[in-house]
Structures are given as structure tokens and as C-alpha cells.
Amino acid sequence: MSIKNTPILFFLILNLLLGISPLVLAKDSIDFSLHSPPTGAEIYQSKCAFCHNGTVKESPRFEALQLLSSDAIKVALTSGVMKAQGTTLSEEEKNAVANFISKIGTKDSKALAGLCDDAKAFSNAKPIISNWGMGLSNQRFIPENLAKINAKNIQNLKLKWAFAFPEATRARTQPTVVGNTLFTASQHGVIYAIDTKTGCIRWTFKADSEVRSAISIGTDKNGNANRIYFGDFNAYIYAIDLQTHNLIWKKRIDNHPAATITGSLVEYQNRLYIPVSSTEVVSAYSQKYECCTFRGSVVALDAATGNEIWKTYTISEEPKPSGTTTAGKQIFAPSGAPVWSSPTIDTKRGCLYIGTGENYTRPSTATSDAIIAMSLATGKIQWVQQTLGQDSWNGACTTPDGANCPPNHGPDFDFGAPPILVSRKDKPDMILAGQKSGMVYAMNPDKNGAIVWQARVGRGGIMGGIHWGMASDEQTLFVPINDRDAWPEDKDKPAFSGLHAIDIESGKFNWSKIQENTCGDVTWSCGPGLSAAITLCNNIVWGASLDGVIHAFSTKQGQILWEYDTKQDFQGVNGIKANGGTIDSAGAIVVGNQVFINSGYAKFGEKAGNVLLCFELK
Image 1: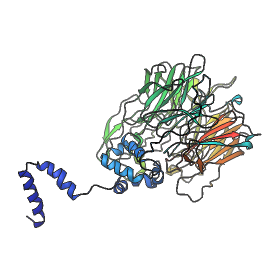
Image 2 (image 1 turned 45 degrees about the vertical axis):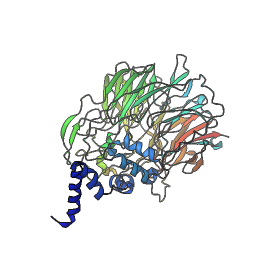
Image 3 (image 1 turned 90 degrees about the vertical axis):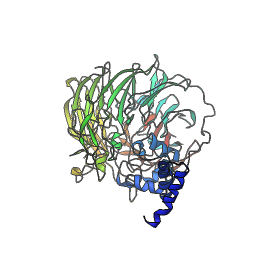
Image 4 (image 1 turned 60 degrees about the vertical axis):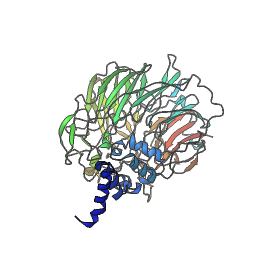
């Protein structure tokens, strides 16, 4: 026996005489007295720094995390996007790392600012912008009678007001509009009804978690808006009454722990059609995670009650054990094929169309990276057109150990943008689908999605290619290209970041507008690519780039008619400081003489921001 152990032995005997269990002693006295609990800085360095210091591109950078409250960081670790990683931490460790990261501490509990002086009850009106696609066919086309901004008066467009989302690092919910009220949501799950003229808040509703998708507008038998519908981060769907602002019903539509709602739901004939995706692709970063068991799906609910009518998985077979990883963890397959975007409704054929993502594990399936047609009535799959097979990928493929990364992985070429349905007089209908590979496909809906033509528009990449959404007037297809983070085999190919116009009949290019990179020497992921969805109206294509600049392109040859750099500080009309950053995900909407767009997107190493901007003709 060494002398240095004598005090511990004496202390052990003394406690046994006092009746204290040696197991309690070992746990509560010896371990905790000899080893101090790790500090928040130590936890961050050992558990978080690798991803958030820029190595993993999808992760927000440390400086963006600092803009969140410690409460928000703890929510992310407990029930948000980092919940899989949070399972390895105790409550004390979560508190410590959250307090270390946050610059602003606990959430500010002051009363909601920016309320309208006269918050009148909602008056019946027909929706102006009712969903993500600005119609059932996802054309993202606004008719001339709804928008007054054109090439002749656009130089008179000036900033009217800025609205700041409190304690947020991203603003990604595309607004929808009914009458003089705009509906949007925050990173922390607050639904806002905002006066379009002044930016003041008419009323709010608090969902349980982040809302990423557009707020869809429901209507009564006369076509007047009567409800809003939306999904949250934890795969709950909500129905809110527009007169009372109260919850009518709430329903979780998928019980998988990583299930989430990213694409916007669509309301049609008293049914809601909901795309289901997941964050399991992020869970796979951890080599301790048994990957993967999620399957994408579309769910149809009764809009009045929330009762499920049907649910169709993009992979019919349930995942089962399929080998082990290099870390000795179980692999499950088939998995993945999430649905990231809003369904397209085909009223003529009684079906809907969706695009799917990659498989997470191998073996892969015939329904990943595909356009799928489903019956509106039953959900039965009518046809599948897969444009890229054998695409299995997850977040582990971006890490050095990559234990959960499938062999011969990638290239992660999702259909992230919704398919567009075009109906032309005296010509066959077409489905237009843009992929993260940089490819665009025209498909025949009457021939099981047979490919009519295809065109390479960009070189593609994990961030696109075509990322969030194209637009069309049924004669021309306008294609935004990001071309960031090229697949290794494509890294020497030129990028085509910018806007491209394609003739729908022939698939040939009308013109291309390649954007110049003006980012300079910045630490965040900047670029000229158009990742966010675009919007078309009055011969203007509204696009926005990763460098935070809004562009108004002419449909004639792509000339830029108007620009605005959102990377600046603003004073929010709700009394909070706002700042712009990267523009990604949600695109602009145009209503009357106004344009609305979000700025700020603290993912993929991009620049954080928390602002909704309103521009108006002077």
C-alpha cells in the first residue's frame, strides 16, 4: 500500500462506520472530488468545435451561435437539430456549454414590442399569396394584376421598413399575404401576423419549436381566408383560426425522433398534403449513432379535424439491420429519400408530385433522387422517375472518421426544389424538375414521367445546382444556379452561378446571366450563387444570392434592373436591432407595390441575420 492512498482508505473506513454506502462514496465523493466537472469552454472544444469552427459546412459558425440566447442553445441540444449530440451531455454540461457560447445570456423576458395601435380582428379576404409555390402548380409566378412593380418604375423601389426576429440567426420562413396582413414565423416558433404597410404586429402565436416552412392559408367555401396551417421542427402540424387566433388542432404526423417539416404543406379541397423530411442526416455525424431508420413520406390530413386520411412512404420497405459500421454500430437500410419541398397539385389528373432526396444508407432504392406521382385520393404511388440511382449519403461523409458514411457514397443530389407543372394551350403538359446535380428535366405526366428533354444548367454540388426553387410563366423556365461545394469529381468544372432562361418546348437556352463573385476576403461562406427560390412577375425575376444581395433580373436577357445589398444593420420597427446576411431558402414575394424578403441564414457557414425587409414604390 502506498502512502498517498492512506487518507482515502481512512476516509473509506470512517464512512463505512457511519453507514454510508461505498458505492455512494465512490460516485459522489471520490470521483467528483478528484475530477472537476468540465467547463463550458472545454465541452465546446471537445464536443462542438470541430463542426462549428468551419470544418463541417452545414453547421453554423461559432460567431453565429453566439447571437443565440443560452435558452435557445439548450433547446437545440434537447429537442432541436442537435438533440442527438445533446444526448451525450448531462443537464449541467448543457447549461455550461450554452452559457459559454451565448453572448446574450438567458432569453429577454420583456413584453412583446412593435404591436399595432389598432390590432383589429381579421377581416375576410381572399389570399394574395397563399403558399410557397404561389399556386398549386409551384410555378412561383405572380399574375400581373397582383403586382404593380415593373421595369419602368422599379428604380422607385425603396426600403419601407425592417422587422427584426428577436434572438435569431436566420430568417427562413417565406411570407404569405391575406389583404393587408403578412404571415411569417421565427427561428423560435413564433408565428407573426404583421401589418404590410407599417410592419407592426397584429398578433402572434407560439408553436412548440422552429417553423421553417411557409405559412399556408386555408379558405372557406367562398374562397376567403379562414385559417392558417404550418408544420414545426418536430413534425407537428397546426391549424389556427384567423378570427380568434386560437389553436384549432395540432397533430404529430411522424413518430420518428428525427422527423421534421421543411417543405411547406399545401391545402386543397379541405385536405392538407404534407411533405416529411428528417434531421437524421445530421444525427449520422456521430459515430455512436446507429444509422439510419427514417423514411420520407407524404401525409394527407383532413383540414377540418387533423385526422389522417393516408400516409405514403417514399420507401415501402421498413429498414432492417444491414451490417455494422467501422465503429461497430448497427447499420439499418433502406433509409432516407426525404421530401424536402412542397408538393405540386395536379387537379386535372387527381395526383400530386414530389421530389425526393438521397438514401442515407446502402442498399439504395429506386425512389431516391426521383420525381414521384401519388394519387390525391389514396396516396397510392402512380409512377416514379428516378434520375440518379445509387446515391447514398449522410452527414458522416463530411467528417474524417466517417463511420456512418456509406461506401462509395454520394453525391447527395436531391430534388430540393419542388417540381413545376405547366399547362400550355394546345401542347402537352409538362413537369419541370431541377436537381442539385445542376440538371433540369422535362417529364410527361401522361407517360409515367417519361423524360421529354434534359439540360445541364450547372455543375451541381451538395448546396446545388438547383437548390430551393425555379419559376415559370409556362413558356420559359427560369433556373437559379448555386454551384457551391462541387462534388470532388466536378471541382475542376466551371461554376455557372447565376440565372438561366430555358425554352420549355425545346429545352434550349434563351440566355444565361453568370454572377460575378464580389465577396472579397470574408471568413463566412459567401458567393454569387442563387440558392434561394426565385419569383417571377411582370417580366422581372426576383433572385437573391449567398452574398446577401437582392437582384431584379429582366426576363429579356437577364439584365439587372435593380439591386439591394442586405448585409447591413437595420433598426427594426419592433424596437429591436436587425441585421442582414446570407439570403438562402425562402425567396421574395411581390404584392401590389411592395416586395418582401428575408435576410440571414446561419447554416452552411453562411452569414447570420434576423430581418424581414419590406420595399415599396415611392
